Image (cartoon, rainbow, N blue to C red; front, side, top):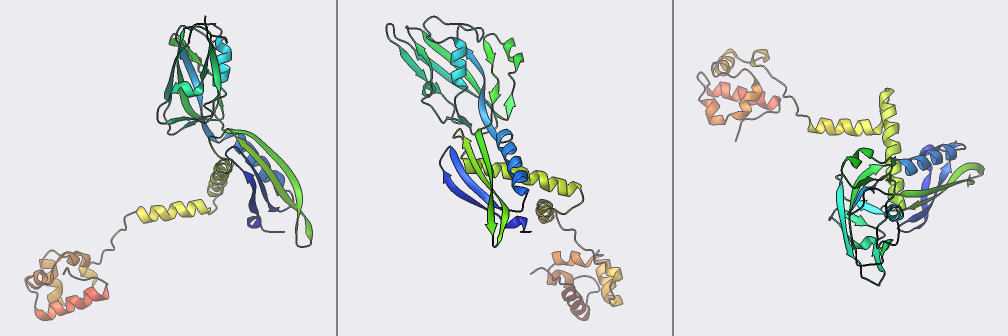
Length: 314
């Protein structure tokens, strides 16, 4: 059987919103396993952003109508849900809109009319969300939040008068199509190949979405290996980082355990030196002035220090 680490990912076509890729060759049966997992992760687990609440001046709930507004409020809210929003950061942000209509003229209101914080980017600003047919002013606030997957509307928000909660589809991946085919490796023709098509809303590229799905896949697999007593690559890397950051404990070399002459041993102990490593904080002239430290003892000490890869301060 061909090794699982010998497959390749070939990009056949990609733009900001769609991409087609081939993954293979894979051992027989692995095409189904890998493609199903990737597809589910792509559709459910890629983080994104969405509007989770709106507040419109003069409107109490989503089933209301406004004089001078061509659409009803519910239709306008459904248009807001079409916006592809990219949020830079993990905090919710408020977009504000204020558009004044003209009497006797239809005024088009688009997503481009929103006053957005720097962290918010609307990928499709040309989406038309409403039409004003008189000289009314449409004032609106839209709350943008980050999230994953799908979220029901937070009905507790209705405690604030006029605030309308929305359900949210955070996932930037709109469609994933998988086709399995056979491919050849040498004379063998029963290997699997995955033909993968990914379509996003443009807030992330298809290859970025696939990379994120693969990282989630990898972290889950590594965690399972660790829990089952294996030795995952992730665990090795984490352990290496921890070892690099962990302060190294200094090995103690006790004076009393060294085979020193009595004169040198007494000179060091009288100076309060019980660990040979402590001497690395002293200069040669300081050690030479220890009581009872003669020239011969000093020479012996330097030999002992060198043998233990230590030295006095310069």
